[in-house]
Image (cartoon, rainbow, N blue to C red; front, side):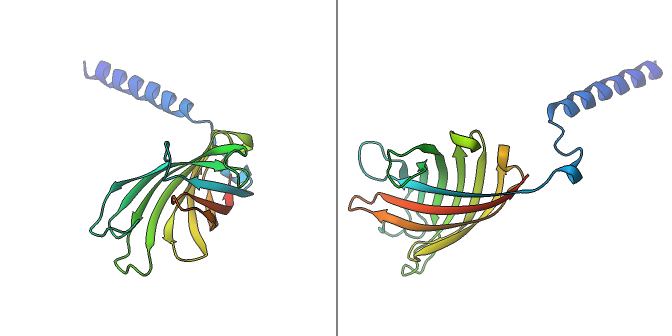
Length: 183
């Protein structure tokens, strides 16, 4: 009886291992033969806070009444475009959380966690994940690329962003250059 149970257990384990092994595409089987790639992406993020369809919404109000103060949280699903005009080619969406993290209101620092989700072009169905400090008062900001999926599997790198334009309703356009190493 113990032998039958042991054989049954071994059979179940073998079938399970075969099922798990067949799920992945073999990417990690021979990493030594996979060459690392470098990609530079130039794009524009449109942060729309005004109008009938905002793409960024404050979901938590901190103790201050500033636009983005300490403790505030904004959730965003912003369009990413190829050019500065909102009607230019849509590349994807920036799905992000911005959190006001500085108690020194003269600095206006945010913590940003963003997934750039590409829905068109050569990077369609791929993502890049960016995390970092976003000092709003700096002309240029640098953040870290910490990962990705699809074409950007195992991504690492950095992003340099600057405000391209800002209007009276608070809508902001950010111009970014993203430098990514990936497989």
